[in-house]
Image 1 (cartoon, rainbow, N blue to C red):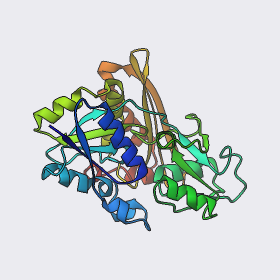
Image 2 (cartoon, one colour):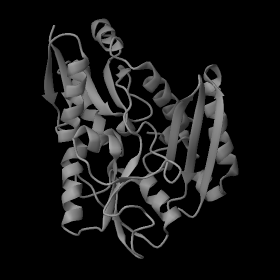
Image 3 (cartoon, rainbow, N blue to C red):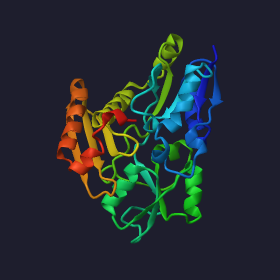
Image 4 (tube, helix red, strand yellow):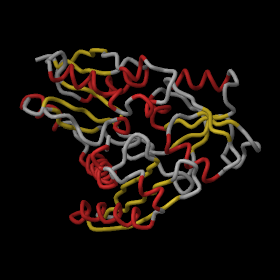
Length: 301
């Protein structure tokens, strides 16, 4: 059986789809599916529908049988999957950090510099560290955003190191995790399929990287416990700590003025409960204004 692999058509999405194809045992075919997120480039996604704009067309193609599996950057996947869709596999996680394009460090940016991003998390983190920096909207695939910086539309931007590496681009300077934690699931490539498709589920189980899957599952559980949505400024990273789990996270107000952080290490078998407790602790320590941004779990996406 030739497996039909659904993907967005950006160079990075195609590179990730080819990574999945190379990992699978057997013939496959790449099928490009155009998403709303690809078509709409002039507005932040949070204003027009959030993460679903990267995934809903791929979900529809899965459910109607046009494709057998879909490849995603996990940080762009909604916390709660649609009915009938299973998150079946993840490839080994790559570099989770952000890279700064346009300067050697955030401290090295001149006063009042313009940093282009449409990520609420990145915008809030930068404002927390450098409140003098002006945040300007910047969307598009990696090449488009690099071109916009070269054209002077902004002085700097932040891009995921994993994406740059997968495209073979040695651009920018990595931001230390102590300075900026990544988005939940950043650096991970996930594969979805129809929940009842036993043959495809078996094929994907063979390529699943269990440590990545476990870490990303915890980070996504943290988002769900917070009731975070596409407007929320959230960072989280789960990492192995000698068999235990080290979990670092933070929530921020949009202006970066409030930043509530936590770091815990807990046994792997207690990880799910530990993540839920961390989320509750962060919300308890947040101001009413910040807590209200996470007060409606049914909005989570």
